[in-house]
Image (tube, rainbow, N blue to C red):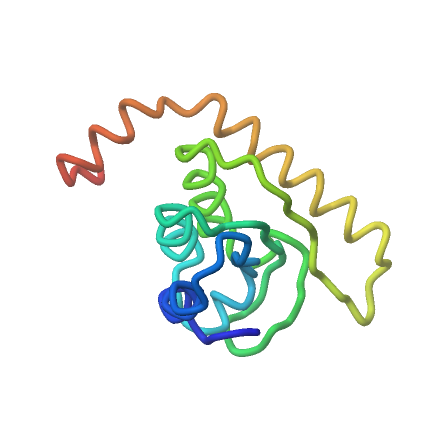
Length: 139
């Protein structure tokens, strides 16, 4: 079953009333719906319902299934930052379907970029960033 937002999905799951029903959050679908993938992830994690996720990229106007970070580098970084802050260690998979590019090469490129994100997050001074966020200090 699908709903058009994380909030509606959570409300539907609450109505179902079963502990084993959760959400597969699709990064690209959140973009396409005009939502913040990171904000959606946090909302779902707060309620213990993020079971898995799909990762890809798009231009927001269609579910383009592009290589990760080809368009939305900042948003994918923010998305994985939220997952790291919450110690989320669930299942994630690539969900990209390219029409012209070599599929294996594209998957390898996405995986390499995601490894770079993980290394960057490990180097990020999380306490300093969180302090700046609390103080609303973008500099």
